[in-house]
Image (cartoon, rainbow over all chains, first blue to last red; front, side, top):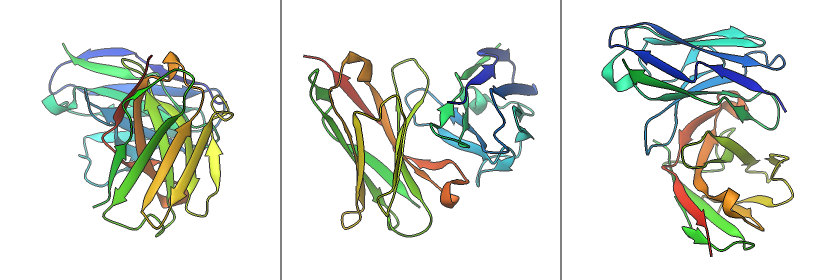
Amino acid sequence: AIWMTQSPSLLSASTGDRVTISCRMSQGISSYLAWYQQKPGKAPELLIYAASTLQSGVPSRFSGSGSGTDFTLTISCLQSEDFATYYCQQYYSFPYTFGQGTKLEIK
Amino acid sequence: QVQLQESGPGLVKPSQTLSLTCTVSGGSISSGSYYWSWIRQPAGKGLEWIGRIYTSGSTNYNPSLKSRVTISVDTSKNQFSLKLSSVTAADTAVYYCAREGCGGDCSNDYWGQGTLVTVSS
């Protein structure tokens, strides 16, 4: 299985800030990387797939980059509704695996 | 707009079989190049991919659960299902069904709301 290291696990920031979340793979996965946002009591929502493609309807302040083993999710100009938990997922090989999650909280 | 809805017992006894169904609405489960997935999340923890099925019946499972998992599809009912046998308390989680789009290139773009399954006597 492919191991994923997502960091940080907790991120404190303020509205208007720019934040980045990292996901590192134990082996290369090309661009088969997705990012999800999850709010308490809700299902995850797809933000980005193929490492950098924005899912339809997702605000442009979200962006993804990377390929191979190192990936980044960037949120520019944080809004109040962005405070949530974020997960990366590799779908390059089975079993698909998720990062441990990053909780983005208000500073 | 595709919608997915999980259904099934919320309480299962240890050693028994957990059975859940996901009903797809807003589109045919057979149309397009979609895989249909199950993912779970224990309370306060991260996400675990269980497996997926294509409408042809082809499946992929997580090896950590493979000996206990069966995913099936019923195209006539626009549903797919999960069976997990010999459950223990460690299988207590919120179970999500999801669609994997673009023939597998878009990851899970639509999710059900999730259903909590508790394993307890």
